Length: 265
Image (cartoon, rainbow, N blue to C red; front, side, top):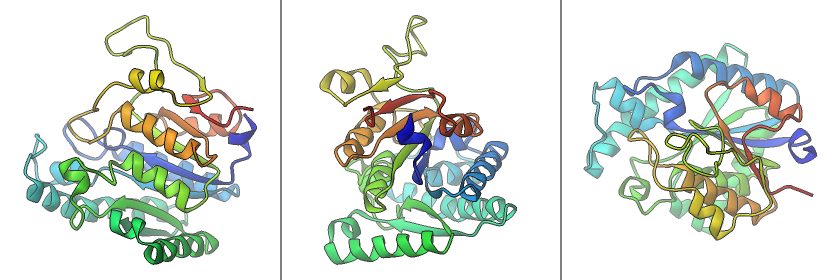
């Protein structure tokens, strides 16, 4: 699809379930592969913004915790630990491919305030102009909305907001499933992947179901809502598996990957 192959400014969101093993520890091979592919795409002339989940999940792994705590304060503490570890790893891996990264932590009040919003937009523009790859997350130690469930929200929505702020050409949501299916592929062997959707309808939202893994806050429902949000601003969205980051090459080569929302002419 030309809207994907020709996309220059791309927001890529990666979820906790893609970044980590079941025990919460970082999947270093996958993270390294993702950094290499994104660096190469940037080398090829695309502007990349990475929206990353994983701070709480990585914090859990670092502290040896197996169950996501219910208390907001504990989640904030885990996010503080995990965000530091996460950025250290990203800086190391992107640095191996001569890429400079910048951390951008956002909160809902910044997005909602006109002056602060413009400051954020200007920062993104300057970072991209300088060839720097912004890495975005919600500031969970300050903003508890995501942690208690009222949300900027989850990082799928954050990625959609980031795509709007940066006037991106494409939003890609990397997850642990290959796209939107006609039924739950984990329980229904007859489930079929839906390659294209012109728009997000109530029927599509009903297909999306509920929450994801216990290491994250999202699921297919949040991804469909994020797709709807960017589609309303003329930005297509692709939901695809992040298990093999090299699949991004095939996507940009024009192969049909995942589920593409909007952008169909």
